[in-house]
Length: 277
Image 1 (cartoon, rainbow, N blue to C red):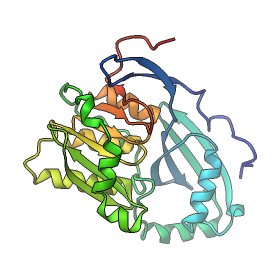
Image 2 (tube, rainbow, N blue to C red):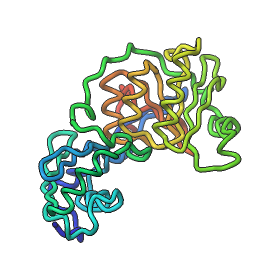
Image 3 (cartoon, rainbow, N blue to C red):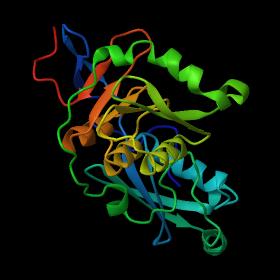
Image 4 (cartoon, rainbow, N blue to C red):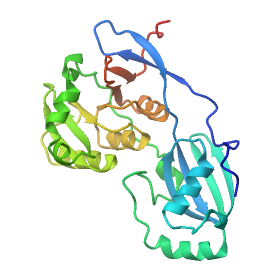
């Protein structure tokens, strides 16, 4: 298999990209930051589709080797004969050649494959499922800046399970008055948002009013979930990825990052003024 001592061509992005944002304050100051990149990676073993997941597109060969080892698909990296990568837009395809022993073991393993909370897209076997066409949301106003004041502290007070055990993500709904009305926790960040969406499905709260909050990093899968659920505004306590911002802007999802010690940053909709110099 290819050496992992350095990144191979096609496994890294062409370079970091600045993304502009506007502070959710009366001054509406604008600036730009570099956001992490991500893409959909489809892995095929000996010509058979196995999984699609969202990854950072650097050192992908190392990821595939580690994924194969940690999921017991191979007993050692010497059973990985070759990795061929091809990039197309926001997607990477990896054609992995395994030894005969590993390939036969893989067929048995596939019968037992279950999605994990970490990657969010394990088991999805087509890139068009990972990067689907969605229905754009109607344009919605941004929440008042005062509704985000001390939001981190208010979230901590709502996380009952995390207070006792830690290691839990949360997804919350803040209503039109700025009050936290729902909180769901889970060890998986995708699971937490799914729980919130499920709660909203049988709750009189309107997802178009107020906003949802996630305590985890904001990657593409969570953007897709919010859009499908009709949530108008998503607030993330961790910076979004570049692809998340692109999709939020494309489908009219208001996307706000709430840093620890700075004003809320509105990445979607895109600011209309140039960032300050």
